[in-house]
Image 1 (cartoon, helix red, strand yellow):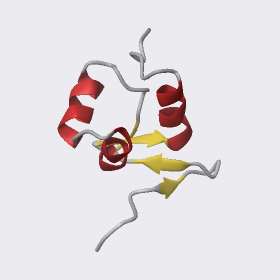
Image 2 (spheres, rainbow, N blue to C red):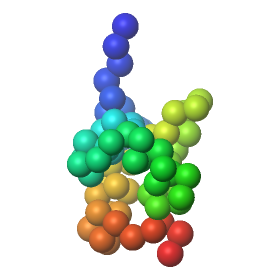
Image 3 (cartoon, one colour):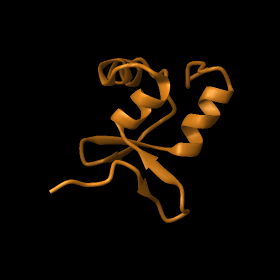
Length: 71
């Protein structure tokens, strides 16, 4: 069984998984996991042990220059 990687939340925004974010940023999922550990990405939404991000949060982070999320 396969599931879509972009899951709409109740506000109608897409939730992106690690693979989606990696593809959008042009890096590997391993880099995404490193950036999660280093708090460089916006806070993710945890669904079980999986990370998801609002599409708008990732786009805003990119627009802001991809700065550390904690700064």
